[in-house]
Length: 600
Image (cartoon, rainbow, N blue to C red; front, side, top):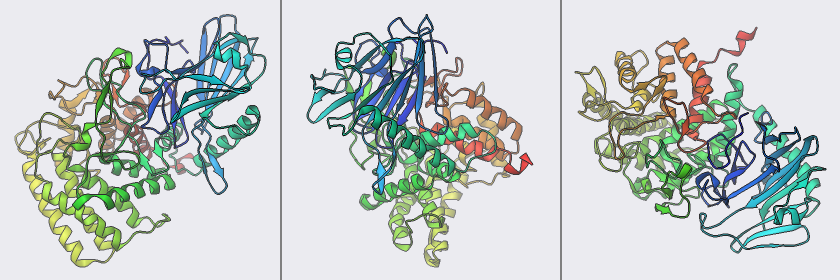
């Protein structure tokens, strides 16, 4: 593997976590991003957005430099291994993970990162550097130590490193021979009740067992198994188990394209993703994660004033996500600004009503779920349906959150139709005949208006806005959402129009018209997966499989994808790892794979 430049951050990163906290680790084994105490907390390790300063990272390097490096996950786990070798061939292995297993009848997922270091070749000399900083990179923490630990910071958040490595070597960043395995526990300022190496081995074994048992419970396709397993683990790691929220990504402010200014904080839960995330979790039978997310959504619905929803919420149901820029960090490769919070929470996005209701529909029909729902839950959803019906033909920011203008977006209107359609289906299932008739009549009215005003006869396709003439990749979802049948000639015509205008090489752009920040230069990754699904619907199976394989080749060396792809260089851009992108992998692979019976 090519040795990366320490001062040029990239998205060749691995994700470790335990559904409570997480970290991103580069190919050199350096922790370059980790927010504490939660996904949306202070980025104590922030070198990913601060590559020019020697702060905000945690690494273990060969003293004489890296001549060769290797990195992979232990199969079917969230445990990452990195091997580093110097020019003499001396090498060592780093194993990084965050503990996760069952203990005392509940899930054990402490805010702890464990690093195990062991020699694998020769007599390596190493240097351990642990340089957290606080207040979004603005404050260097005070450092103190005891006989077996080092403390970084002070109340309210301080970290403690407990280790069997010589503390002076870490405090002074002194080079030393790695003669025996070392274990480093980094977590809250609490006493470790036992020897670091003993606890580290026990945590490793139990965490590995947890992930292997969890993966064994998944439903996976015959083909592309590794890709689906890695994407399922990634979705799991992006779930905040305490509340059930699933974040869009772990990072903030990775630009969608170089010097684009399209730098957003994605460490929150977008309602527009809900239906598709639930669909992916259901397909791989990640039942507990799916049910936890449904409970999170139900909490949002229960607290919605008069059935009104906002586009994005915090992981603990926060409704205010005030957006600000951070001056202490220059940004990814110096491409600021760095943003904390997201002003999209205050926008009008009418698609959210259908997204939530379509996601919640699963709970009414799925008999595997432990939490049963019925008429009361349906009644909680009806105000959302009323909002959807009142808003389906009104302008909004659309699913792409345009900040400078509003239109009646077809995608938003279709999701409003989905809200009414799913309520009709739920009411029928619950044998509420009058409510089923009520919502079916509304769904039919909305469908008729969309079919008239979003269909452009001159272009021979559906278009992005009512009475408009431009295209948007979200039109590829018309069949997946049930608005059109797969054999409807209007669907085939719309897919053909998207191919002509939004396809760049193998990739589909979300749109190609200028927006608040100019003309898009990278492809939004999930749009290509939408296209793959549409190809499958149209019977173009071979094309769909070929394109899926191409997209899997665009993942980084550990099988992870970001938000965007440069169509010319194939480089990954945008926040990472992107939940939506891994949803695309799961949904397409499960749809396209040969059947298990084919192996006979």
